[in-house]
Image (cartoon, one colour):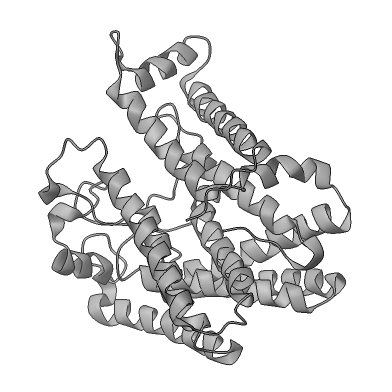
Length: 365
């Protein structure tokens, strides 16, 4: 999804999208999952690390891209637009399923149904329905209803266990709808951090991104910067206060997590607009803009690339992925080797982005 504002204003959005993709690759591709610096790890359960901001940032940017895309049709629903939205949903969701299935050596009865791309697809579809059928007051009202309703549902179902790993409603809902065999098992039991029910509050991330894009195209830059900073500061405070009764938790995608991450997004976007569009550092921003020019393609390629590593047997280390890490680990400690492994892949996929960009190849979904 390309983000282009009036007369190429706010290239900051494209640069921020590129940074988000680079960070997604950085945190998803450590040399060793056992040797990671704390900022590059997800919070084990409650809490929020810098890494936990990456996925919600991407959803905010999806919402911003949606604003510029739908503006061409004056935010009016049509059968042609509906078919295009449904096609995009099916393609993105199917790509997520295929990534989960690759290299196709596990039975379908144990295929994980959900994932990052699947959440993006669902949130995009639901957000598109909302923004094409409601004006701004309706969008804000729906967002508040979702966040407050989600909070109430989790609390009513679980009481004092509402936010526990084992007993939360998100897990129970997915177990009932999908079954344990189709859920992620990264926490030693069937629980999916990209669950069906928890995609509802993730939808609000997209709607917030949509409304932020509306705001920055309708106001002068000085006012945009002020409003982003004020909104960001208020959202951080509200998120932290809400955390007292509903913990900030990415795995459950709690309502407090949505508001808290929205605060950071507003502040970071303000910084990028000031640096790129006000100060005019377009040359410095160009590498990030290039990185964000084929976001979904680069993300999918990075996942496939890493999975292929594991398929290549190599020496005593077992496979190419492990052998590469061991080689780096011979000249530095494990955490630095793990970080360097990730940085090498960030650079690698930037070069691939450059090749596509120079050839005017933009793979749209």
